[in-house]
Amino acid sequence: MQGYIINITPQKNEDIITTILTPTKIKKLYRFYGAKHSIIQLGKKIDFEVEYNGVFLPKLRNITGLNFPWERDINRLRIWQYYLQLLHKHFFDIEEIDKGYYQILDYGAGKLYHQNPIRVILEMYAMLLHLEGRVPNSSCFICTSPLEDHIHLARAFLPAHTHCIHSPYVFNKDLILQYLHQKSTIFLNDTQIQHLWQILIQGI
Image (cartoon, rainbow, N blue to C red; front, side, top):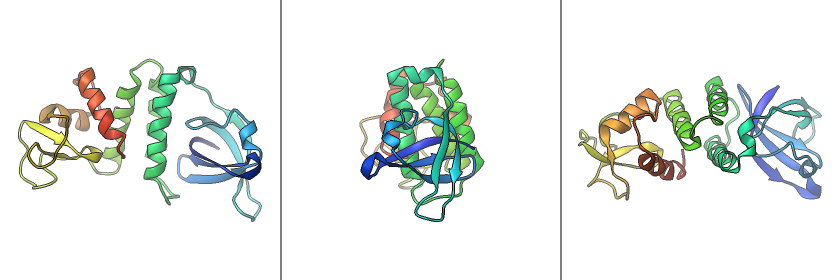
């Protein structure tokens, strides 16, 4: 079985509980002496086995790291790990998931070495919004009236009139809707990308 580690919770005696996103489930697995195994880190893709013993949580066994070249780049790794932490919060108390979530992570992991990591994450997030049916339309989420040319974005990239919410970031409506619907950041400049990242890290 394969999956991405989206959370690690330390336990006593250097044991850990890992939360792993697999193609169809979010699994919580116990690992003895986990802190001594460098292969277990947030964001890591692993191949593993599950041992069911009927007591406490199933155990994480026979782990093999499925490495990516960008993991040696601290900045890319940090951005990847930050997004997976957001994803873990998003899946709080959820076990069964659509296979699309795993496919999105595979897509991003394959792109991260050659492309701007924040752009990759933003495109992954647009894919997630499509998967969940949460892509915004051209109406203000506060007053429901049609948006004007310049907008603010709330958490989850919900668009609003500049007079309906307060935000330090102003965006062009057409560029944002193009990004969200095409799942591509190609038409956004680096400043816009940084502003979108600051909104994304508030939560997905």
